[in-house]
Length: 522
Image (tube, rainbow, N blue to C red):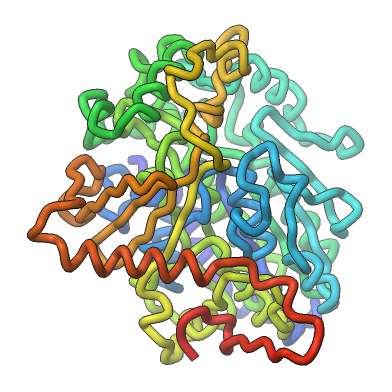
């Protein structure tokens, strides 16, 4: 029964080619394709049928993954919204943007970003949805902002029912609603955003455009209306780990669990319900993505558009007895979905290339026919997307980082979580706080393996094929010494390669870059 709810949107997406071509001719198709980045907030990568999750959460994204290409080794540069989103726009790691926490986004350092290049290339630009970066309204042609607690543009006419629903969202204290959310799917933000995005695209189709369609969900407050609230009853398995793993994961995880349950009272007792809300929202968003793509087809815009589906970071989604994100660089919060489809993307299905959120901007540059600005550290994926031969060694690994620096803050330093504001009045709790974000930690992924090191030299080594929840640290085990040495070199290679390349020497010296901004392979 659950699958039937999306049969109509998917069937519509897969039909109507002749009509689309006729409409596209009237629109005056450009040789420069539109670029639409559909990004969710806090969506875990492995909760989908294409990765054998038993509940069918993303039937549309799964279909597009098979029609285009999807990366099961895609990672955020940092498992926190602000730093990750700044990195998406600039193609630079948080260590060089200096936006390494949610409170540093205004400190972002870069040359040109995605929308600078798009404007110079003659594209129109729009944000529909969540911003959480340094972007301001006057930088883009279109500005239709939403956030976790509702629409943010007072001068923009709200869709019917939007104001009342936004008022409801503000009552949830960024936590959850264990009952079905009021209203229908039309009141939910993803539906309203898609309506706004389609209207803007239709009105601005005389020129190519870059659209950031940025859903604030499935990030908390964890709420969802029917039929999604009940859609997966009896279908969702328990998380692979529980609170018994907190001691293995260490003090940051233990403190996060303590604070989370102090602030979000009833979280652990209602964990199964919260997980279902989260997964119901993923399905709701997936169906709205299908609705958006079908709308692009109806308007004759699909055939000249390249799409990417991704997320800024993941969610524990019950792993270790936790929700949200915060401590460490576990796969649950660092690995992200990434699906490309549309114009110029060859049907390939699964790719094992290791890629990052920062690779989207340089890819968009080459799609727009523009050069990749100096200072960009991401690699263009155009060779991969088009099915050309590409150097496999360039994409054999990827790095991710977390922390705003300094030393680790522990319970011995302070345990007054309310004084800092990590725990507030009512049911508020901010998981990104001094205890969870202090220090610096880096990880590298390669093949089945993951290597982690912090600024004090503490190391972790995991075989993710056998240990996907990272509870069996193999660092120091003699049997894996060769793997350990290889991953240590790989991490060090990345750490050196992603030092800030700007400013380049002003006089005489030549500054060499490889094609497609590759870091390691000519």
